[in-house]
Structure formats: C-alpha cells, structure tokens
Amino acid sequence: EIVLTQSPGTLSLSPGERATLSCRASQSVSSSYLAWYQQKPGQAPRLLIYDASSRATGIPDRFSGSGSGTDFTLTISRLEPEDFAVYYCQQYGTSPCTFGQGTKLEIK
Amino acid sequence: QVQLVQSGAEVKKPGASVKVSCRASGYSFTSYFMHWVRQAPGQGLEWMGIINPSDGSTSYAQKFQGRVTMTRDTSTNTVYMELSSLRSEDTAVYYCTRGYGSGSYYKSWGQGTLVTVSS
Image 1 (cartoon, rainbow over the protein chains, first blue to last red):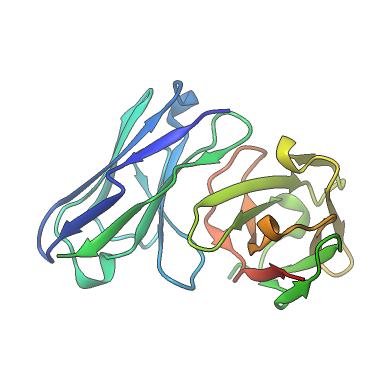
Image 2 (tube, rainbow over the protein chains, first blue to last red; image 1 turned 60 degrees about the vertical axis):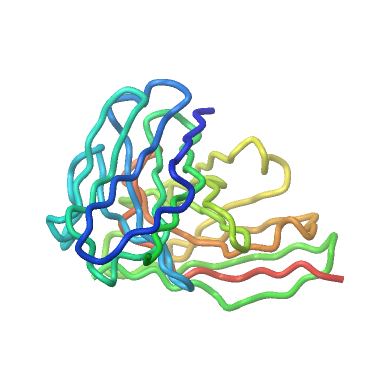
C-alpha cells in the first residue's frame, strides 16, 4: 500500500501568516487522486481539497492544493483563527486508500 | 442535504463483537458506495472497507479480513459495520463516509461512533 508521510508533524504559526503543509507518497499517486482534510477535536474530518488541487464546495480560497506524482502541498495563504486544527492527506488512486499521519497546525 | 447518522457509543469486552449502524438520507442510497474509516484516540485515520449498497458487495482492508462484516438494508437506507474478536487496540471512533466509487475522497461523514474495548 502507498504510505503517505506528512511534514512537519507540528507547525506553529500566527494568524495572518502563510502555512505550507507537505504530503509525500511512497510511490506515485495515480491521476493525482489526493485529498486534504481538516479535523478539529471531537469532529469528523472536513474535506478541503480533492484531485490534488480542486477546492471542495464552500471552502475559502485561502486554501489551495498543488503537486503531482509523489509530492503534494496544502497552502493556507493567510491563517484565520479557525484554521488551527489537524490536517490529513489521503490518496485514493490505489486501493487501499491511505491517509497521512497528520500535521497539527497550532497557534504560536 | 446528505445526512449520515450513526448509532451511539458502545462499550465492549475483549473478544466480543460490535455492530455500528449508519442511516443515510438526502440522496439516492443505492447510487453511492459507503466506506468505513476509524480513528484510534489521538491517532490518524484508517480505512476499513467499503460496501456497495446497490448489490451488497464488499471489499475489506487486509488488516480486517475475517473480522469485519459490512451489510446494508435498502428498506431503511442503513449500512452496518460489525467487528468481531474485539481487542483493546480496536478502541476508536468509527465513521461511515459516502464515497464516489471504490476509490474516493470523502465529502460527507457520519458523526462517528466511539467503541471502547475494555475488560
């Protein structure tokens, strides 16, 4: 199965700053079938990005995804207070789908 | 609007089984696959398997083969996930989530069901 490695494990930033989260796959992700989720405590994950760069319905344009092959990036252009959460990447191009271990975005 | 409503929290002893339900509404139940994903406390997300509500066909992650059974009831638009031979490592929140195919991203999620395995 494809292993996804997210970095950094924890990212400490202030509101208004730019966040760059990385997701690296152990092998190429088929057709850029990669998604990003945000999860807050006690809540189900929330889809942000699918197909590597398509924003889900209702997601603010400060969230953007990029990448292909084995290297993918989620960028949050200007952090809002509600953006501090845990972020997961997921590949769904090869069965079984797999998730990264998560990046915790915390307030500095 | 799409809604996935799961059954309530469960406490089970090691070796027992648990059956979690997920009732779907707001869309054509048989038109979308349903996946199950779990999350142990403080840990990441783990895909368990998938059921096609149209014909009941299933596919399970190798890790859960022989211990998990996914079924559906089209009369009530409900899918079920049963996990047997429970051990402490199965303590987790179990989510149902609607997929767009056998490989899919997940836009709609249930609220999660906490299953605690403890003697």
